[in-house]
Image 1 (cartoon, rainbow, N blue to C red):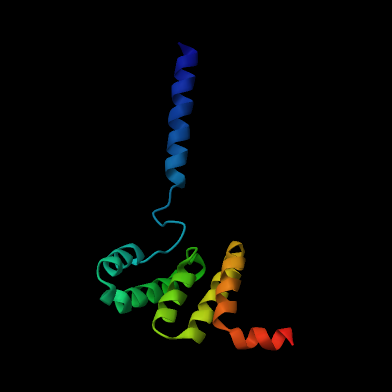
Image 2: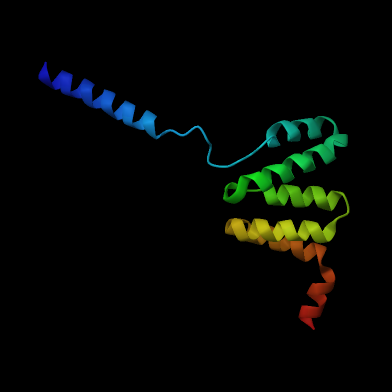
Length: 121
């Protein structure tokens, strides 16, 4: 009987402690990314709205910018013909998330062919 009470008490205490550690804020600040992306996939004319939502999430996220968000915003800029700005955001993605280095380097190298030919000479 005593072991059962100790087990129940320990389980209750552990549950309360774990519940107290939970925060209301997630690991990253996504903003309205999900709803904006959904709208964009259903209506590509929503590209400008998605770009604005991503930029707002990036600016208000601070150090909590989620993985891929800089790259996603860079791709939207690229689709708008803003190649130099896209490269800036690809570099930010690479700096913040080193595991994306190979993909971001490939994207940057494809967008800056003049810089690549000068390095090779």
